[in-house]
Length: 291
Image (cartoon, rainbow, N blue to C red; front, side, top):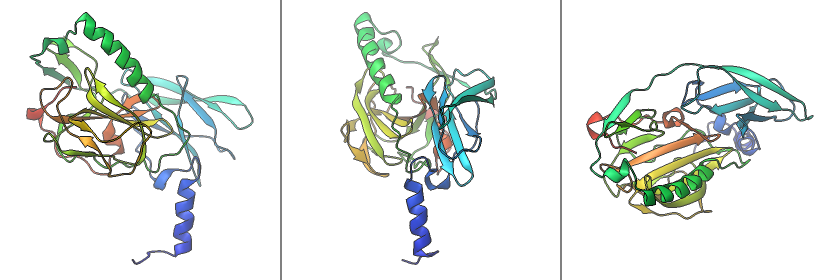
């Protein structure tokens, strides 16, 4: 192997990337302060990493030679205009910092489902859904102080986008919550690979999501994989980038096989495209799959 720079320098850079709070691999997503996006906020100079919260929830803070940066996930329901984060400094002092959220309009999607219970669940279904929602919320709100190895994700499945993030959904002409992930079309049984290293937070079979896997990458960055035909990992297991975690399926609320891939940052569902190191194939509206 031919080294492009002295080994000692490479070793220093590798070691620095593992220090708590240091920016992984020197790469950050673009500042995209819209509902469903990520606000990249440069913080005032400090000798120690500050604690940052948004709407009471902890926020990822990464350090570099230039100071500290907060990465704030913005829920789809965020109102455009002035928002602020709360900052706690090493000496205990608390301040706030404002940032602006821009407006963004997402398109609509109308889907017809033959299984009416997937649109209007029965009472017995609602009891199950209620229990599952608490479990899903808990997984997506996971917080671990460990700094992610990288914020540049690989695609978990090679395939075209069948439904982009943020679509306003109508099932059988009834409005439902916006699409909080990215749907990738792929044949049933296609292996799904971890986009980055992390720890399996939970797995399970859910009413709407079908077979599902959650991966914690650190500091509030959690990814979700739904509608799997099989699950190949267990809670507590550590996985590496590229490791198979399951296979594409059509379990839960779907019209055909695909992967619903979600990204959560400080418990806000954000557009996975913001973290990709390779854009997926062009959108194919003829293969839209609901989640």
